[in-house]
Structures are given as structure tokens and as C-alpha cells.
Length: 206
Image (cartoon, rainbow, N blue to C red):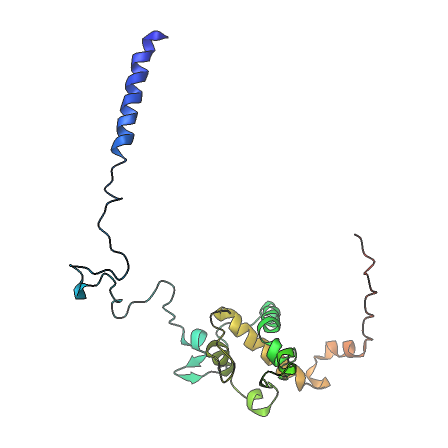
């Protein structure tokens, strides 16, 4: 066993040397500037330089005008940038109830709880003006705000804004719908008695 000790010691010394060589201070002491510090080499003597004209952050190119603005050739469009599925409507209902219903109410009549407590009257989606407004109009208002309503583009992702618009269309259709608007194979459901409310306490498994 003793014959192996010199080789082990040599290996340990070499390993220590490699580690020491990797602990140089070049990166730690590299020239750098704190934000807004004066610079002797940067244009304008400032370390903080403006972006080059035309610079776009990764993921922010936004070439799809309809998706990101609700417009086509600068005009509000009455179309959606992607097919709307039942899952999209369900998501739109959820987001609407969170962000929109406090002012506009669950049915879009402009009488949400915030309004009932004295806040400025919100828009009623069932007026002729808004019932005939293009889908892009609602998207633009959600994104950029209008009147007393603030912008929601920081809180609501762009796709969810379109899902909310789709759900608003559902509310508008339902508000003015007649029996003839219901598919024939579902009209019998209108005559079914409402389900009995669940008993207090539930009575389910605990």
C-alpha cells in the first residue's frame, strides 16, 4: 500500500494546481459600468446607451396585426384571429367573470357590484351601438382602455383577451335570443324542469 502513496500525492498536487489556476480574478475584476455611470469610450460619455433604431425584444415582433391590435389595415375587424372552440368560450367566461363582471355584471348589462356601490356606470353590451360593434372594438378597449376603464393588456394575455371578446358575443346572442335560435335537437331541453338546488351541507363524503 505504501508504494501507491507517492502517486496519490502527485495526483492531489496536480489537481490542486488546476483548481488554483481556475480561480483567477479576471472575471471578477473585468471592466464594467454601473447604470448611468459616465464612460470615456461610449458615445455621449454615458454607459447607458439607447437601443438601436428598430430594435425589437425577443418574442415582441407581433407581425400579426389582427391578433395584437384587433385591426386589419388599421380598421377594427369583425373577425377572430383563431378559431373559437368551446374550451375557448369556457376560458373566456372564466376570465370575464374575474376581470369584467365587477363593473359590467355577469350578464354584461353594466350593473356589476362595483357600479352598485357607486362607481361610474359601466357600458351595457346589449345596446344597439355595442351589439353591432366589431369584435376588434372590444379587443381594443380591453387592451388600451376607454373612458374610466383602464387598460388590461398587462393583466390579460392577448389570447385571453380574444376569448373574453368571444364570450361577450355569447352574452349578446343569449340576451336577444329566441326559441328559434336554439337548435331543434336541443329545444326539448328548454322544457325540462330546473334542477333542484343542493341541500345545505352537501351530505357528501368527508
